[in-house]
Image 1 (cartoon, rainbow, N blue to C red):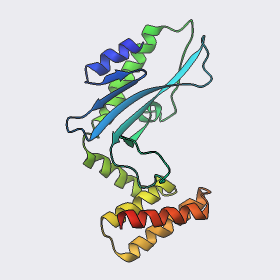
Image 2: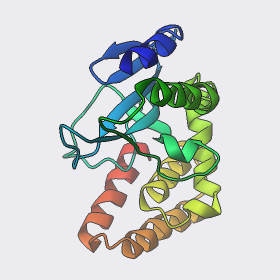
Image 3: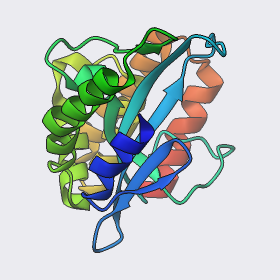
Image 4: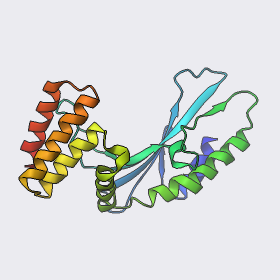
Length: 199
């Protein structure tokens, strides 16, 4: 099955490393990743897996704490493959002795062609990833998201918005932090770090 996937993605200039397929775009500032994830309850006779999809860049997210390791690439946009498909459900496949590998491979190839590659083509530049982040900041679906609130504060500082707007975004970091059960000390340390880094 992986050979079938390899054949499809190799034609799109992805390179395989183990269970992962990655493509670095021409300017070297954006990378696309297709990573197979095995279910931790898999056995030798029954293997469950999903696929993680990510358009990555080298910009470290503002919500990353100082103790988190530095890496070359950070996720900018993406999800598990099921959430890119029309059903918007977490999609897992299973393989056992009765599975038709050819049928399974064809299903995965179709999902990659129909949903994953079009998704990636939306993110061919840093500007596209930044625009995506900015859209999340104003989306009602993400208004309770603590990391997005931190990103919103950072972007406000980058954009040099006025002091009243910065205070509003700081208050939102505190509010979403409390909603997500983040300790007060961590919230305040995060706010000060973002103000210092981006202000």
